[in-house]
Length: 298
Ligand SMILES: Nc1ncnc2c1ncn2[C@@H]1O[C@H](COP(=O)(O)OP(=O)(O)O)[C@@H](O)[C@H]1O
Ligand SMILES: [Mg+2]
Image (tube, rainbow, N blue to C red; front, side):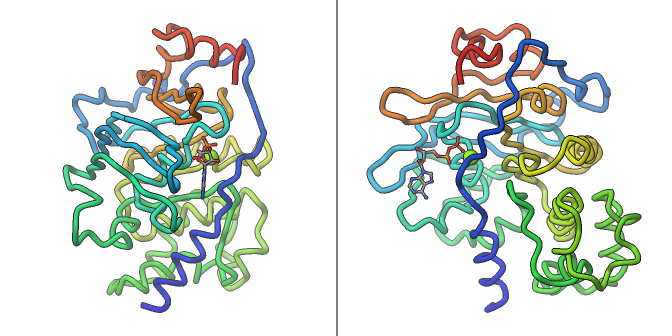
């Protein structure tokens, strides 16, 4: 239990601030994700996470208001919008990570496979196992590569072959070839891109349904960024991914569905428009979306 708490503490230490990398530009290449063809229409795959009239508060400040969205299974959903509009807050509401902020409170309903995440008796630690999270800054534990991946399964009482699970998780995170001879070296000694893939391997190792990624590439170089995007395309065969990104090319390239948020005069963030990524970027219904994706605002 002590270890479990320390895991949460470490996870909660991830920064909540924004980087200011901004990729808006007129020549955005649209939706390689749908071109890859592996994507199924949302209606056929079902909803994993559903938010109904969700508002999020820090003390008396309402950071997010009245959000109704559905996250489709085995698709990549991108959450975009200007800095401070509540993307991270909303993302962290989907696995109760924000409970770790004392002043935080959510209203409305968040369903995971139809189960109310905020219902009495729901264990947030169990939820975070089903809905894993990858942060902006790679945050491997100060432990060996092997331990980084084995840690979660161990504290969850995994009974199988840990070496096998570590290898499988590292392979799925496209990291095995890089680290197979470095399993006993510190995870912190890897490159930034490798560290982020290690964090993804760590998340996969406990076999979540959903992986939340909060600007996972903003600290990475372009090559590492592309590797993560390719990895996401692989992972969506088995997992549902929700990614917050500041980089609109990334949203356009990597996601199937895009949710555009902005904020009102009261600074409360809200969802303007949600749809197929290609629609949001080429034929948005709302002028605010159009202005944002064309780089006129944001
Ligand atoms: N821990 C916190 N305490 C108080 N206010 C916060 C906290 N985290 C975020 N906020 C505020 O909530 C709003 C939304 O923040 P955030 O979710 O980080 O937005 P985004 O990820 O879109 O940049 C901002 O006004 C921010 O200042
Ligand atoms: Mg954020």
